[in-house]
Amino acid sequence: MSTVWTVYLLRCRDGSLYTGITNDLSKRLLAHAAGTASAYTRSRRPVRLAYHEPVSDRAAALRREAAIRRLSRAAKLALTDAR
Image (cartoon, rainbow, N blue to C red; front, top):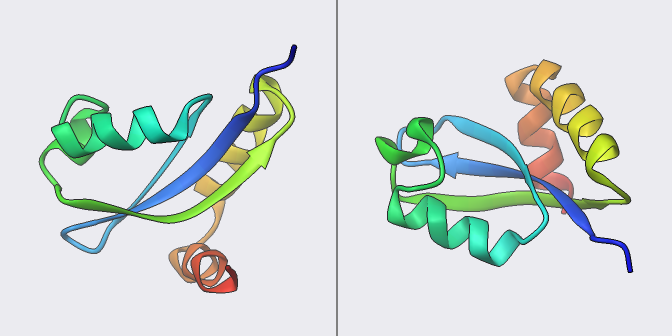
């Protein structure tokens, strides 16, 4: 049985965007909301899921996360508007 990985973008209270990966999106979003998922989002709560994309495995998730992080802010926002 394979684990489904997800690449996601969060929109933070200050308008910034956070990119991450997880194999359990619901659990990770709860952790972000509680301030226990990352130092970056802890001080920028509340956060809102802006985009998510399933990928086949962890390696693919890491590659896609890196690709999204290299995008300009405008391109990231276009991703969020595409869904």
